Length: 193
Image (tube, rainbow, N blue to C red; front, side, top):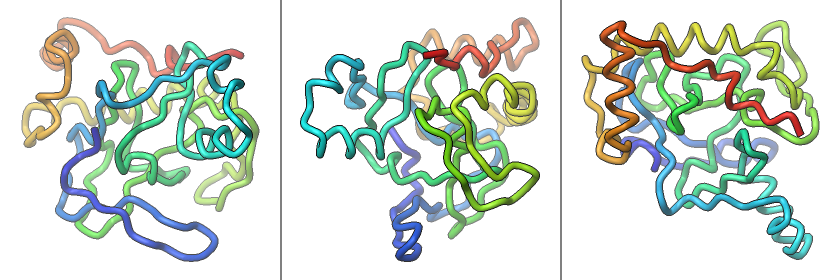
């Protein structure tokens, strides 16, 4: 489930569409939650589809730490890559805004934490120019720090997606926020296959 204050907009012919904030989304806001309508597709199921459907699934899904493809049913699939992403995946099947996102700003992920299959070149925004399948092994510390910096804001901002989190995940977040436990590293999202 994607944050309700978002919309899909056409960017240009090379990039296609992207997801944009329609209102300010403060750091610490949960921006996406895995929900029951999202499909988890095994490799064997993926292999059973005709090539045209496999291409669609590969374009609009990411792999979890089990190697299954997560195909989101809503506009989440229009989130583009950025090396300076303003959201980050967590090991608890949700994403969090790691920066304040202004109305009209594109919502982005670093595809390096989405277990891509093949490396690809991307527009350089920092020292990186290529996204690799094993980026989680190399940049998890950086992403963990971004998540940890955003978590203190969790209870200070409106959370329209909280109702889609399981009570177990929400309690885990409260314990982390209170300093009683630590959120597992994003590295646990890595799929080595």
